[in-house]
Length: 348
Image (cartoon, rainbow, N blue to C red; front, side, top):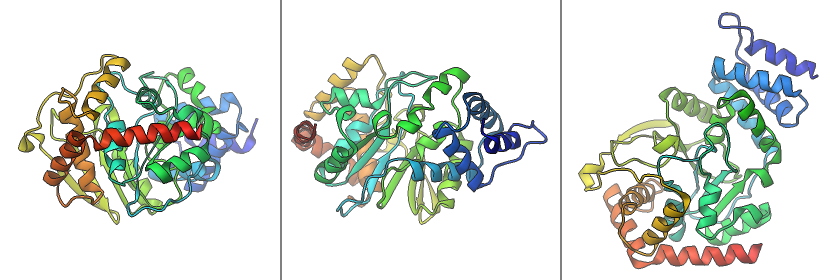
């Protein structure tokens, strides 16, 4: 038993009226003791459920990010005129709507805007389809690439994926606790704002509940992140919906600007692409990448155009939407995917 960890557990688990928040340093220490399994399984499970009930503070989330930075993988800075865009997604996957971020990432990287994602396998409690399965269906197997291989693919092809089971096994060691406690622990929020990259980034973090956005934004500001975007997206992802006005906040040098973008103003209002199964999703993505119009096409244009604008590649959203359509129609994105497939295969 870790007596140090027991004292931290006592602080957050003492009840509604007597609990105490951890400092940033204490939260960092607590997560390091859990990641290294110096805390016992009983202590780890108790901490995760107590912390969920209490709810993490921005300082605690910042401290947990400090622990990830200290113990987790970090890709080296690459030579790029654009910051690396980190498109984060909930690790427990999707089961209602088709994930759009892989195709968005291909559109961005096809014009020289590097994109980084991260995640693992199917994960409790949702057990939805993870991004690594989607990428596998698109012909890029991130499971077999070493971290050095991911680094090279990010540098040469503008695309990277940190596969947690292989590249950050300490973090993956906490996955069984999610199933055992039956609830998402606070580390699920941590995963949405983690940046496994040592250079300049533009983080995009999705969320479902407004309090989560407040905690994430304050923690990122505490850590000095200059530019990031929060999105109330599909299933907590950074994928913008088309059936409503997305709630998006852009932080420039930590100054927030709330955007309310109505897809109807751009002729793109409609239903979100419904999840059927992985095979159907991959087929629809392949059709879009080959310039065909289907029910997924408008959602891909809506998201890709928005992120082309936010990265500074185009001056406004309307230009971004037009450019995204042309990139898909011309086959540039599809040819870029083929290049990435070949490069990834050579790195294996």
